[in-house]
Length: 529
Image (cartoon, rainbow, N blue to C red; front, top):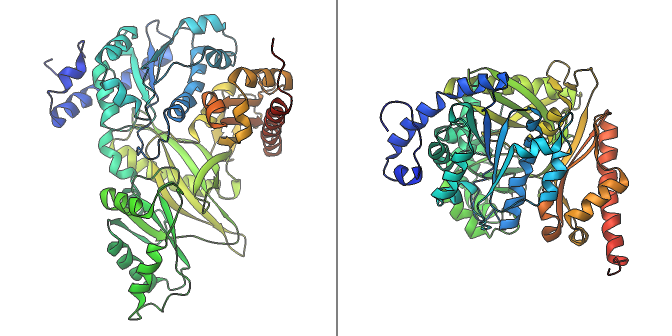
């Protein structure tokens, strides 16, 4: 284990345990230096190229409600099986629990111009057999033999890389254990993606963002911040408190300010503190004291809640390539819900052209800054846009996600199935033949009635009602998170159409058909054989 090139021996986690953080990062930097060569080799169709998919989601334990939902989130990335169209690529896909064979068959059936059995022979599925709601990377690092098995499936580490969902020191250590680079952000850049860190970046890059304050820890910090903000903008009627590491809006809370004493009044701060104690938490399952403890532990921000007669929440997805080039990938309008309309439910692609170009310009500035910081892989910038009485849209950057997110799998599903690209100048997605494509997607189509359906029932419904993806027209439905259908009554879907209206109609029709079939199965259960 000398020199700059880190090659993982068998039982690498045992070796890693003896290394300091500085030593681990030194070895990690040597691995990442290989990513450029791996990336270039991917274009050459080598016989020994491979990718290891570890869709590890490292979240607050309170957010990961169950092991089965964690498994379903890991299966969101099964669209990557479409990469097996490359006739020599081998893929190792790792999950907490085994994936049902019929779900794998469903995704392989999406492959165009490839014999499914040939693709299946190049796919290795590795299950940890641990259903606890913990990070998949954490489970892997506890099991050196599983890591050794994965390593043995990699034909050539010099032409392989790791694809995680998000990146922490856990994913770094998985990469080190396997001896392959990771196509994702360096964990040392994580502070840039926190709520406090991204506000600082927005300020430094000149990207507009809401009035607020960051790096706060206590209720007293929040009270002082709100008093300071009201001195600058007395008309604010509400603010949003956010945990630094909150995900999909679950770490947010709304504080109502209307009716408070005038800014500067002697009783203003006490009144603000009272409103803070009555904050409306987006996560209905989190007690106030728990939220305050999380805020003290990880820190957070408070910022003005942007309001208006017409308000939308678009996002921009970008990536930094191994050579440092920033590539603008897509824009989406996010579909939000929850207690105060801040929880991510789904998306519409592409975002409305009226503001898509504006937000992409701001996002590109942030992307260039991240590239200079050494970022790698996909990331997203979330915005709030508000329409004025004159019809003009004003945008505010609110979050930076240095990871894949809820808009990643719908967009890549569309891109992989159509070979199309998003054009930032026209704000349209076009296939190689110049045809427009649009999508509507969700991870949260939920109903207790859906619990009556098994994955096999879903596939029967798909076949009988034509709820498949039509390769000839390049329109239709792709389902995901299928494994949590029966236990949670939840499923995800991406509806693709040639126009926004068609995509929306397909989306609504699919939901209606599934609910009708679920009701029918309850009212008229099948006769025993």
